[in-house]
Length: 516
Image (cartoon, rainbow, N blue to C red; front, side):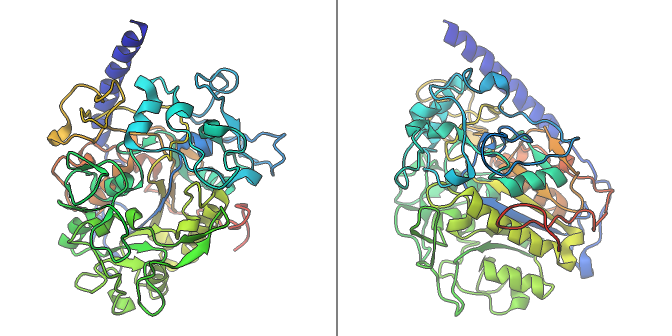
């Protein structure tokens, strides 16, 4: 009876929180007038002419920011020195640290020397089971895993899921949070692994899958199938129907592109087997097919990984690359002053932050190097960089988000077996229980609020909504989560513009501030 009472109260809270998201949708901060495009480009509703989304892998908010902005002085790592006026975040308070946490393993600090960790269980069902009716107390039992290099659990077994880093390891991200804006209330649009998060980023929709895959539940992607037709695909694969943000941008003639590490070689050949040494000491392929969402849609796919016919055509319609590029194409476009309006960047596998083959240290190198290079460009004055993540990897996070969409598929398990709430799912599409786990979200820009923590409810499709609102594309439709998404606008101050003060150069190896 006690559990039923808890569940009733939690589900009521979910519905109330969902209503607050709907209210947040109406936010129009800083969107009172049009801004003419650079060099005759399209007008925008904010001063942001270039949005760069760095989309990383498999991190929960608590895994990276549990004790922000405080570090453990006895950890042996380099201490992080936070500004005195740093706002607090919804992290792991004393009531959730040892010995008070309700999980069977207590949260514990992972040191920089332990940056190479196991990959956790982050399946659609397992994550809901770990949430345990919203009690957030079954992570070692359902999300904990020791998959990866020998010793990657650092002696904690499946309790490794309770491990978290602080600013001694995630130094660059903590420094970006100090100087720009971050959220402590942003979530995966639904539960589930990488493909799910990638699709939600670009379409707010995981339903509409067809193909020979066991990773699909009643037409909805709930696992990690690869895109059908991609020359690098090697296993279960699907094709997605419907529309994505690329289609909407094309309709408006707005330049855009997805730029992926290892998409093609220098001579324009698919780089399916191009590798770098990962955190586990083994070669890791740079390009991972199920991390590239636009490849699932025939309208935006480049299945043969063809290079652009010229630098001038990067971002534009009608070229053989069809908006899908290698990371080297992004830097070529920037150098040629041809940066697309909207760019999605995907690190090569070893630097994408995914546990098991990457690490916070390797990830930091990619993020800091990318932002340093952007800050040195003439386009920085009109650019916003969003750092976001595709899923939580199953790492512990104590905060359940609002459940704004229910589902009653065989894969659901949040409120009971086969159940994520009892309301009909949006669009009638099962297998989209959400919001899912809480994830890090940061905005780095001349227009980002400084040392600011946003508590507004947002999700992965909030990035999609920002693009739609800024460039006036309209919505995806077909029960896309963009219609529910909270706004990112509270992380910006569009009236400020101190370009020099808004540049923070970090050492990619240490994450510490450095000179130009």
